Image (cartoon, rainbow, N blue to C red; front, side, top):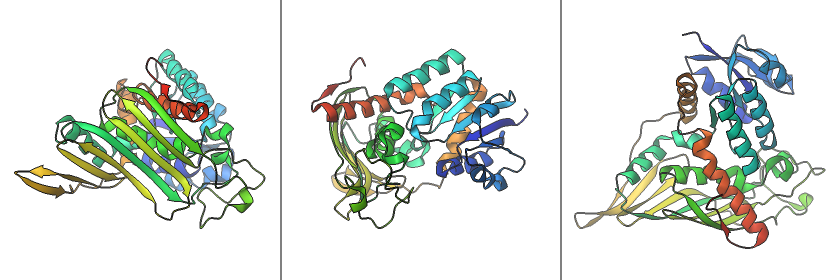
Length: 354
């Protein structure tokens, strides 16, 4: 089978991750790197020698030899670029979140179905070894009935790129919830077997950078700050989600006035519970033979980004939808929209039938 030709659209931080992952996939090679700033694409050429550099993704899409693309762009570009790629006959791996909102996500799902192409979303945690072991344990009943899951993603004064696209709602769709929270929500739902979300109640706060020049920080990823830009997204979120299975509570903060961060997920069952450090190991706490026990499984290291790319290639070569297909991921976008709507309207939102 000839090597599949791939293009990367967007050569920023996550684009570099995709380039590395594709470089480890033996059934494909990167034929084109696309970025408005050609120097960003050129800097990645050592990982994909022979690749073309392009500044207009539409010219790349006109090449019939390109089989699939990775969309690694700011959130507001996910929908229009993905739609263009699907209409050009390309399979697409689009980074998370799916889009700015559910309406855009649904249009992407519909276009993938119309075009008969695979559209996967970058829910990389679904390929993580710890997450899949937890999923198996829950399915086998090793935790008993899982009745509640708690998600914590909180940091000390860590707003990214203040004044840039991360903090501009028109381009990002939101703040810490759509940036970090989407990963935690999707991970929990996947591990639980995708229970149906029923209602959601949430609050958001944008307090610490109301005056951007007064915001103090130790470092700024995706920085430096642009004080001429916009900051109109939340840096804090709290929500309660009722599902057909467990309740799910979340608390997240890009920035809080507590230098005590937290990046973990707690799964509480009536036989045992566990805490997973985000993108790390987990520990199970329970009882056995009349005694309390504590167990931390040791798992062989595995690069889940490499696994994500391999799964995408499996999917578009076979035509079979996998765990990262948009049909399997839309549930997370529904919850994001529900939390934002609840926060704006000050009431609980019913998600059933939506």
